[in-house]
Image (cartoon, rainbow, N blue to C red):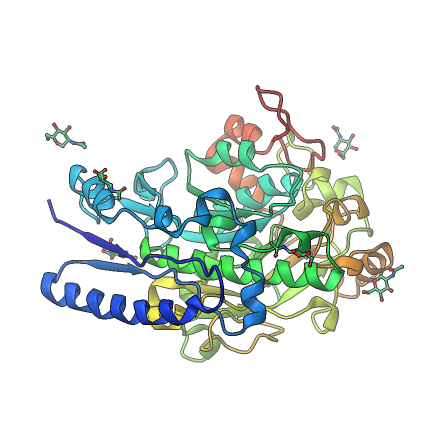
Length: 452
Ligand SMILES: *[C@@H]1O[C@H](CO)[C@@H](O)[C@H](O)[C@H]1NC(C)=O
Ligand SMILES: *[C@@H]1O[C@H](CO)[C@@H](O)[C@H](O)[C@H]1NC(C)=O
Ligand SMILES: *[C@@H]1O[C@H](CO)[C@@H](O)[C@H](O)[C@H]1NC(C)=O
Ligand SMILES: *[C@@H]1O[C@H](CO)[C@@H](O)[C@H](O)[C@H]1NC(C)=O
Ligand SMILES: *[C@@H]1O[C@H](CO)[C@@H](O)[C@H](O)[C@H]1NC(C)=O
Ligand SMILES: *[C@@H]1O[C@H](CO)[C@@H](O)[C@H](O)[C@H]1NC(C)=O
């Protein structure tokens, strides 16, 4: 067996900012030791550096350890048990090529089957991953996973559940574990400790909290996926769908009906010398709003949808009208990145920016190109379903109406063939099971009577 050493930098909570200096020195020593071990051993070495660094005292305030979960309070109990991890690896008969290793920021180690060995497996270089932050969005989650499972193809999903959620995505995620690697994190896993009284604070405080959580999550998630040898990764939300832009690709509808259409088109685009914005490991993609109020006829909504499904529950099938690609309402582009092609040093910053995660990403105001992210507003019920701290007063009826009224981009059915393709791929019975929660608002209750 090939021995693999996984080195994980230990993490220290900053009980007070004066400890910061001590931490910096320790960090330097750790780095030198790591380098030394690497040169000596010449073994595969994955450095998973999860240091909390703080640029300002103000930010440190957000991380007050007093409010952290009990296990996070004592730095000694937090130290990862390096020998334990090595024993786990040594006692396994698998080499690193044969297994995927899940190390989350708490140092928990879970052994996965390689994703290509799962049902509907794809070659590792084709498999997409996603960093997904969710909060009470179960009515959208099944559709989002199914669509991206089929089109990207999505095979690793890292989910962070916002602690203010009233519901849990667990039962839906359970349905998918046979087909993809699913990792669930909480705030502790991304080293996010804050004074919880901020949750009831002003809109500004809540927005700041949400943004900080999102950036820390994208940072931890990216390092985790890189350490576990993943490649293309998405960083958008559960109301956003990565689709093909028919203005740029004449056979977009045929393509979207075939599994793995996105990775295929991505490869084709990268091979074109002129498509310079697509050559690097980070790509920024434009977004467009889809109205949540302009309805279509039943015939249009159910067109090309297998008859055992209720198409009006699917965002991608019900909503056909969109904004013009030039309106500023659409917001900045969102990025996808091939984490395997990004140097560790680009990921040293604890947080990644949401729209342009690393400096080498192209500008984040692109308007055209072979891909387009469909941003579904959904009905007012859907839009207002979660108590969204990020938007605070933005998520009000006026705002929803304003955005939903923007339909000057006309209607599109380009995305529609995905559903028939998905049903064909997984079979009718399995599709019915995996999609049973699409568009259902009430929370499911598990066997123990808890709302999940
Ligand atoms: C680390 O793990 C090993 C093996 O499980 C155990 O014997 C040892 O006591 C642990 N050390 C600490 C400090 O927890
Ligand atoms: C490793 O392989 C040996 C013999 O091939 C087997 O007895 C043992 O149970 C295996 N260990 C694990 C952890 O799979
Ligand atoms: C990582 O993935 C690539 C394909 O994306 C593969 O060629 C390589 O062997 C993998 N490396 C390890 C250490 O698993
Ligand atoms: C959290 O913030 C509140 C209000 O700003 C403050 O009164 C309280 O002392 C803080 N808690 C801690 C543990 O610092
Ligand atoms: C389809 O779903 C919609 C929205 O939930 C519902 O109003 C309608 O009755 C359903 N149609 C059928 C045939 O179940
Ligand atoms: C709704 O949101 C918009 C945009 O943030 C804001 O300008 C407006 O004042 C809000 N309206 C209400 C009634 O809160």
